View 1 (cartoon, helix red, strand yellow):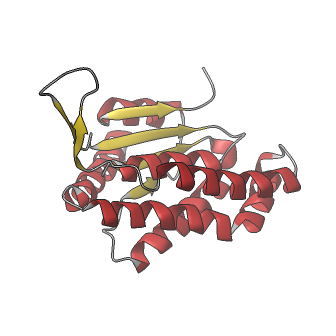
View 2 (cartoon, helix red, strand yellow; view 1 turned 30 degrees about the horizontal axis):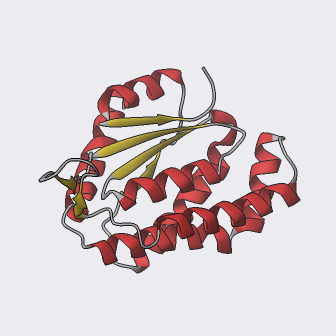
Length: 193
């Protein structure tokens, strides 16, 4: 399969998954976001070990603390925040209401320095807005990032969420990343040039 076919396959799955949650309630969305963070929090040690071993960067204790800390901080900052339907009046603009609408498919380009927390944070933000996300990890951190995405997907599956809300690129390089960035609706790139 060439890069174009591969990206098209990822996008088809992502669009189908996103459409399936486009009408989720605030409570349903928040439950998705919560279990993503919990999956990383609960597996902080093994994910930290895998990240340090694969990337040869950072240290185990700091990675464990970061995995747990960011999972908690992001969840606590997102819970209770409205992200579905009418958000309320726009400040300073009488008669104008803010309405939340999904963007579609998000691309998350993630660095080798942060293969666990960056995919988790971006997935939490994406799903909070009823979007799907495709993670393209740095090649030197693909195994750790893939494990993190798989754990998040296992947690989502237990809720009955549609498959492919979070996908990960199996073999990422600059050509695949460029093709993915051209195909999606929004790009979030962390690290690198």
